[in-house]
Image (cartoon, rainbow, N blue to C red; front, side, top):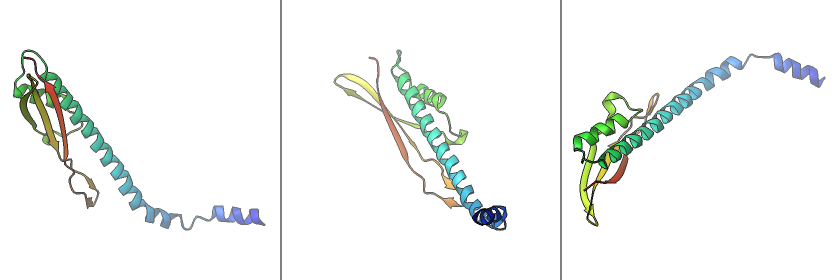
Length: 133
């Protein structure tokens, strides 16, 4: 008796379409959110990589110009579109007689969930590189 009822319920598929229609929008938003979050983390890693390349270039002899540091940053960045490239902010100083440059970058990634706009998140990264004398 119980087995016959279980077989009858297993073959009954009248509610499948309505369940699919109700859950599809939720799944689409979740999948789109996962891709956007993944893109955000790839861009974050790309900016940190570019910042590391600029810091490495700042330690080279002969001393590199600010334009060369910006070029090293742009060559090291990945995961961003061509119009999303942030500018470096360079500030110099000395610490115990050793010259240094603080290399900073601010980035506000665009982020949305299909029809839901999320307010921009401001990310700021800084690296200090000691320059050769």
